[in-house]
Structure formats: structure tokens, C-alpha cells
Amino acid sequence: MYLSESQVQDYERDGAIVIKGVFKDWIDGLITGFDKVLADPSEHGRENVAQGDGGRFFEDYCNWQRIEEFKRWIVESPAAEIAAQAKYDVKVETTATTRTGISNYLFPKGKSNILLNLGLGLTNEQGGSIKVVSSTEIEGMHLTAELYLRAYRSPYRGAYR
Image 1 (cartoon, rainbow, N blue to C red):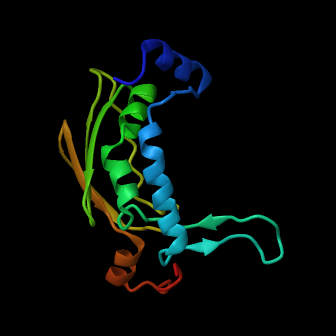
Image 2 (tube, rainbow, N blue to C red):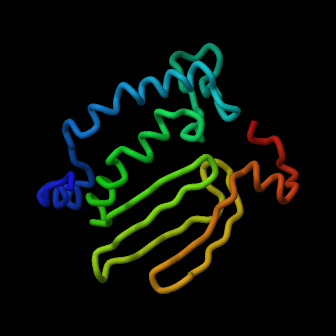
């Protein structure tokens, strides 16, 4: 457990808390990961500031699969566990490979609500399925945009590049 009961109550009341020192050992690795993305953007990378405007706003996504520092953060850091504890007191276990993610959630007795969004997301992903296996198990999948385009031969092919 990373949070005290007082911190959980503060989060419920205020919507935010400060957790000092928990991620200090992760910062250098994440900086390295961001440097890799800036040096070698993915096909989704783009600058979002008009030429002549000041500043920089660079966007890139889906990099956790190719940037080891990001993958390590997602799989090994305490971030998911802390978020679950702060908001829902849910124990979360996750793991991932190049093409799949697996997660397990343990809810407090009597407190279990799950919202699954298999529709259009921030990354233009569409398509998926869900199956209720039992009263305690759900399985399903969500297609990435590229797989969806290949599978359904969408007229939007190539719009994400």
C-alpha cells in the first residue's frame, strides 16, 4: 500500500493529492524515453504549433510498445496500483506484450463497477468485442486502428499517418 487512509480521504474530498518521492527512481528512465521519442518519432508523431508561432507542442502516441523505458513504467511502476488505491481501493495487476495487455482487478466486496469503452477512442481506434464469461470474469479485445483498417478495408486508410 502506497497511500495512507488519510491520503485516500484527501483524494476523495479534494480530487488531488501530493505523493512525494514515490516516482523519483523512474524520472531518469522516462526522460530517456522522451528523448528517444523526440529523436525518432513514430508514424503518429507530429508538431502541433503553426510555423511562426512560439513554443513547441509535440504529439506522439502508442510508444510504450517501442520505447522500453515507457513499457517498463507501465508494467513495473506503482502508478496503476496507486491510482486504484486512491480512487477505488482496487488491487490492479497488469502485464503487456507487443500485441496484448492483460489485467486483473480485485474489488472490495460489494463495490465493483467496470466501464469498458470499445468505441472510438483518442487514437481513432474502432472495433472490439466483449464476452461475459461468468459473474467474476470478462474477456474481450479491442482492435487498433491499423488492424481495424486492414480488417474492414476502411475508406479512412492512411488517415492516421
